[in-house]
Amino acid sequence: MTTLAEALATTVAHLRDAGVPSPEVDARWLVEAATGSDPRRAPDRPLAPGEQQVLDELRARRGAREPLQLVIGTAAFRELELRCRPGVFVPRPETEVLAGLAIEIVRGMQLEERALTGRPVVVHEPCCGTGAVGLAVANEIDGAVVLIADRSDAAVALATENRDLLAATGRLRSPVEVCQGELLDAFAASAHGAPHVIVANPPYLPQAEIAQLEPEVAGHDPHDALAGGPDGHEVVDALLVAAAARVAPAGIAPGGAIVLEIDARRAADTVARARSVGLVDVQVHRDLTGAERFVVARRPGPDAGHR
Picture 1 (cartoon, rainbow, N blue to C red):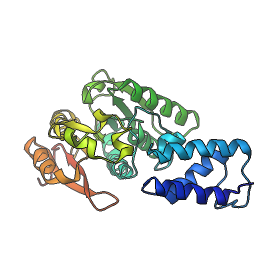
Picture 2 (picture 1 turned 90 degrees about the horizontal axis):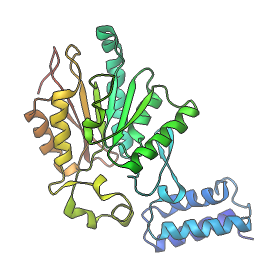
Picture 3 (picture 1 turned 90 degrees about the vertical axis):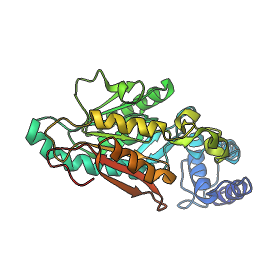
Picture 4 (picture 1 turned 180 degrees about the vertical axis):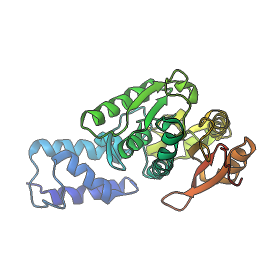
């Protein structure tokens, strides 16, 4: 009978021939998903007949360049495992850096905001998809209030499902509300007041570039979660304008923040746009590959910093 080690080798070869970018890593995930066992830890264990059939199906789907997260149905994101489903944007590892930046900012605000107003720090995540970023914030921060939203019915349903599963297992240290609507308008009815932090991975690519992307992206991610419009940065620009008007109540120092994932080619443009709408302390942060992928900016507070 085929052992896990043999199944792993066959799967690696199949994925490599199909042009999958990370065949060794993906093959291990597929074998483990099909058998419930890590092939590195039990290489000599034979596959049961039913397991072989499942692995064949998973291997064929990944070989056809369906994203690994959709094939196995889950994605690891920071400390969480999130369900993934066709029709909803798949969270990427680089977006874990976005969540980390937001978490750092929320931690820094908490004591000051409670002392000044008695309010918890409020976090808004528009364009939430699976809910990955907002749920990561709620997993790692005590006592904040997190609202996540998307305009897509499928995304709202999946984000709600992920929220409920994590809450049921005690993984959320802050409450999370799921809303539906366009960008920050989705939160208009919230009883929690203005957000202290807006964090988002919005669509930011030009529409004309979508067809040129890897098959896993162009063929499976919703195009309206990828393309911001003809220019690409229309949604980023809209969020910056909205943040300048809505983020952080008066009194907090140095002011509430917006944290965005952007097109790395547009970092300088985004910094200029943020400053032009009145945001301050604008900073660019790099992703796991060194690309200028994230912008953080603040609304001026009583001790507004340098521009």
